[in-house]
Length: 616
Image (cartoon, rainbow, N blue to C red; front, side):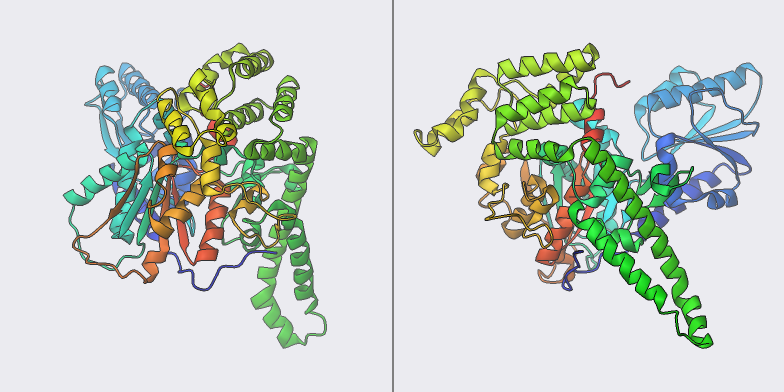
């Protein structure tokens, strides 16, 4: 049964304004190069650009031809070239080669580079080194936020996770701070800002500097509260198998910038079909947050109701038929087309998941989350590795095992690592180094073994003494402390009998009732009472939590108006569709409307692919 929004949840603001601001700025930048021009667009900016300004809009502003930026010689004959790129050194070097090639051939052209969302000093240095700094004009398109749906806004920066959390590169923190400042300028002022994580704290500080430097005007806020959270606060949730419909579609077909491309196995033709997945798709909107086990039942009911609507035609007179055709038939045909598409997508998902023995995989994950049958789970992971089922899937299970057990004992770590390298190649030695650096896959140190025994020694040693032991070894390595957090926050639901997935009692339904996502549980707890009473939890999460109550020129904000029940939740390092579904559920239960702001939509495969050692 599809979940319906509670009446007391406020309506979200109009986020189309963000698109209009981005489009107007882009048009202004293009007009800085008057006359006919060719536009070269970096690959990962093509989909976001399409959502902001389509081809006809660009043509109206004298863009003649559009090219995808590729690492090969260009074929453009235009005298003006415009490059829309991310601030990446290899892209700037490619542009420098084009300019120098033209100079060597004695050809004069005008060149403009538009960096998005900002330009970095390193890129300008390359232009100087290549001797073309004076030949090229540079600008920046401050395109920070792309609304993907009524309640999802993305920075579309998938590299944020690797750059910040693995490489320690803080260049995107200012981008996140500026994105938050834009939201504050348009939809604020915010009355309270909560956060946890080092990156969250830096983003907040960057935003505060921008607020203090800018002009503050008193106005009625549209969104009252903000919650900032680092991805490394909760890795477990991002590594669990997704079982809500939207999450599964992302895992199997990869949703990119709000669009998904269904192949011939779904479209029942020899062509692929690109479909936009958002709340305007009535069928998708009703099943997107559902556990997959409920989806077929809903689609079956929908098919029957559509058939009933079609059957109304029988017995109509001419006037009634005319009204039916003009007002209802087009909508019914559209719904029928979408219904067929989603039924085919479900069948394709079922085939793939049955082939992978999905139920056995979920059972192993649930055992890891609950801390049961660990030896059997390790045997399953070994079999998974040795059968070479999937490089990233095997890695995901290893990381889940390490995170939930607070690291692997040395014997298991060495054995599993050796088996993985034998199956998938020794080039993944760097992958293991990257995962260790992130704290995703670590070997227990002698002190960690004592900490991992906390549950067993709890009866013999006082909580205070165990806490001291934990603190003593906190400096050894990044640790998840998952078991302790799970206890403190009741992340593993205790249910008598079978968990009800049709009318779920809590957010755990997104993982079949096995686990409440830590990130979403923190949001729930903090909105209820702030960080008060969560001192032990924040200590286990390595601190960096904060709460800021904003005063300022806007005056005091009423605590019960709609803006206080509209909350921006900003994920730094990526957010999964499962977490979005969980927050939507929490919003319905508590009368909140959560607007998810994320550096990018992620899932376990994307997250792990970003840290693979073989990645160029």
